[in-house]
Amino acid sequence: MKSFVLATAICLAIGSGAAAQTADKQGAAGNAPTKSMDAATPEMKGPGTGEHPPTQQMDKAVPEMKSGGSTTGMSTGTKMSQADCDAVWMKANPANAATITESAAQQYVTDVEAANPDKDGTLDKMEFAKACEGGLVKQ
Image (tube, rainbow, N blue to C red; front, side, top):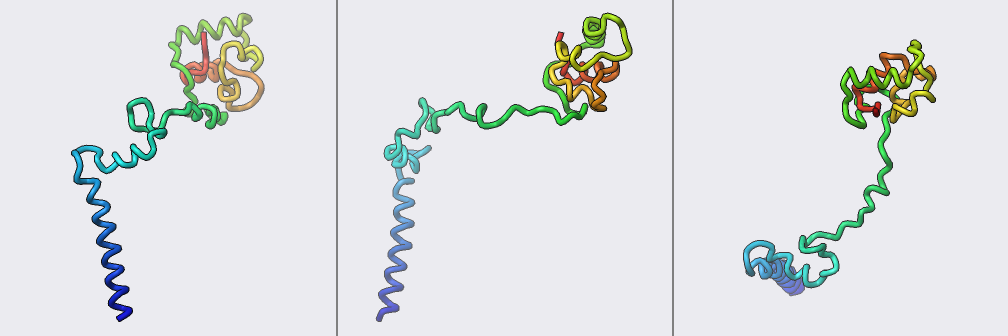
């Protein structure tokens, strides 16, 4: 007799759960299953979107990405034309030396470490040109 009562109770529990799930779906088409939840938690709704309001915290939580010193995939700005790159090189290097120091390049290069893969403390014209192609040089 106990097993019969237990089996009946389980059947009723499963049946009432299924009925509870389908009762909400019998309303209007669209988002009917969430209407009862929206009514219970109106503070979760954003301005007319039904979404959680934005917190603008993602920018603070994720640090700015920097290149790991490699010239591959180092684009952070817009690619500069060869003529513009040559003009900036001449501004940074008015003596037309073979290299410029990293401190001289800082005024024109947004990420000197990424622009100088050999880490020798100077940028030659080829390294500077690659930095221009990678969007690391500003005018």
